Image 1 (cartoon, rainbow, N blue to C red):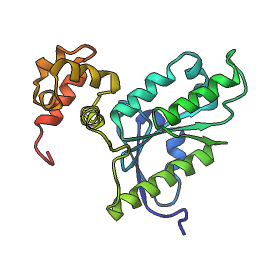
Image 2: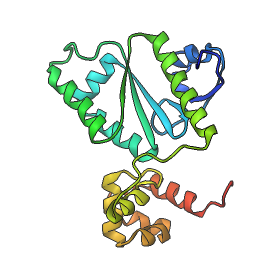
Image 3: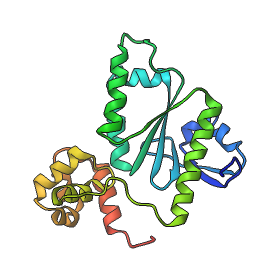
Image 4: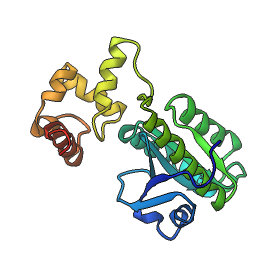
Length: 218
């Protein structure tokens, strides 16, 4: 039986300092460090990253259509993203209908394979992040962690490989494969060649080149 006090190491984005991160750090068993993140707010191990939003922020991101950009960025950078939403996110605030929220949650869950977890308050949110960390890190320690969504077909395997590159979402993966023809050619491409691909940015091309050129453990 698990309980508060099991060890868990959590990395928080500095923007969460003085907010939820402080509640998490107060939990017994937690060691918490800060590190700037491209997306997400808490890294808890095993490829799990938590995007934390209030109910109001979640609704607003649906209304302004920012939620799906955030979700695609999370999916491109992390194997197992999770949304943690604190407080009511069904009561209308910004002229949305309840179906807008239901549809968004359904899309995140069934299409992008990103769970949406509910928390009633800050205390529960802190415990939820901690629980995710304990589960993920004990799973890693058992040596049984598998990358989520492993492919069944050759086409899926090709896409899976390319989407595993840092900063590469499904649209950019398609553009890379269309431009270079094969996954092998994508991985062999240099930084300048990558920049010729539609949708590629300087930052993403630099990150891909850095990862592919780095020696193991360096």
